[in-house]
Image 1 (cartoon, one colour):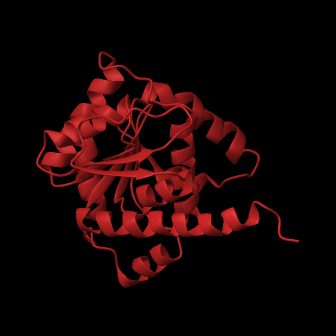
Image 2 (tube, helix red, strand yellow):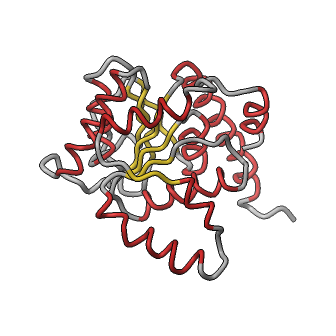
Length: 227
């Protein structure tokens, strides 16, 4: 006999498909784009917030759409900087049991019920990741990006950590534990850049793509289809 919840589970798949389709169609027009991550708990008076806003403004003025999680803290700072820049500010909002506050600085706003659909959009449409101090969610996004690039499931892109003093302990653990134990290779550390100055972040992204351009190759597009 069919279990009472199995029909709900089956119909829920259509909702998940709809999130992927709608998100993909709305975001196709925004490339090149940079995904920015950081803590939702960071207040406007924090130097982390102010730095995120500066970075996003410079990226936006340089022609990059800026994608954030659409909520408060660093997400708001990223959207705010881009909103007052020349390129679109995109917020990928998430419905949570305790509702996430949607910030007011979004030219394009897309709301998701499922974290995995939302995370897919962060990666699929990014030409670079910029990661500021944050908690579990920020670390989750960082590790997701590193894993996908390391395993060849997405195109290679700059993954830039900002505020070097915050990340130093994690990177030392990578070196002293993960590499020492053979869990990652020493070459994997080259996937990460540490840059604290907004203008240098913009320059690093342009430098990365100066020989290939921002448009994905046919092979990279094929990879993205199997993300």
